[in-house]
Image (tube, rainbow, N blue to C red; front, top):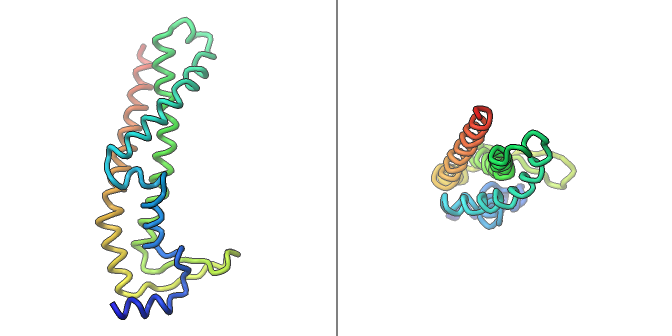
Length: 168
């Protein structure tokens, strides 16, 4: 523990740019904490976003002259089109968590001292690497798997829905 405190004193990386601190920021973030706790905590905001996008999607779908004559198909296309907003939210979640995972797994920390794109790198001490690896495997890993399963499910729904609309 004394070595860890000593490393903190000589670490040139600003505290807010350290991977473990970034993980803490993700867990405190309203948006990025959705998948961190459970699948249910991720599903609820995605359903709310889908429900919110549905009226707009229905409005856009009703602009088609051919679909106005077929209300069932119009509704099906609107339901499928409304999946694009939750898909975009999932992709953004995946990109953020993936970036964090890569920073935790990397042996060097990339950082900027002044904010003028003066990119520097600092080798993590062994204690930091071990700690970051534990967090990456046991905290961020399950989040990534949850997001990947959700993305696969969303892609399946989109493909199935599109194929269904084409079939009829």
